[in-house]
Length: 139
Image (cartoon, rainbow, N blue to C red; front, side, top):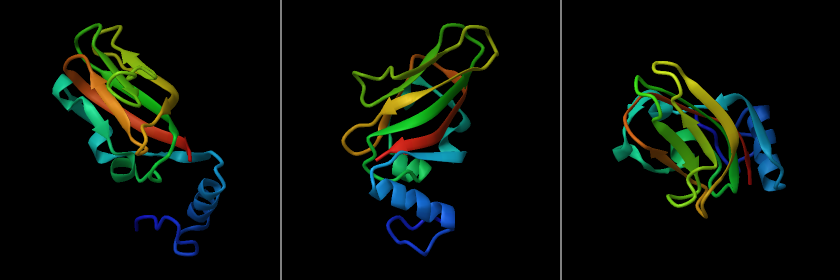
């Protein structure tokens, strides 16, 4: 059952606690992290670069200021990059680079969001696998 934001008592106790923390402007940390079917190991290309709507893809509360995210990538080509940031100009708040062919590179960082609470994904080439996990957010 999907979360009911701002509707206390219609969620699990822990989801209600997250809603209260968000209302108070406190960071919300998650365990397990939020995941998305679109970002769970799928292949991505440079053509997939663009805005990720965090509320639609990961069920993150709308209009958050930042998220703590993990980005993991894998590819057979060395030096292919993927990054996350608030927009296409400042897209390097979190970057992963393939250093060894067919090995994962995974990094985590605080990623600022745009005014709508979304982040921007950039890929410098073809990637065999891309994983994004959201471990928390700042309202």
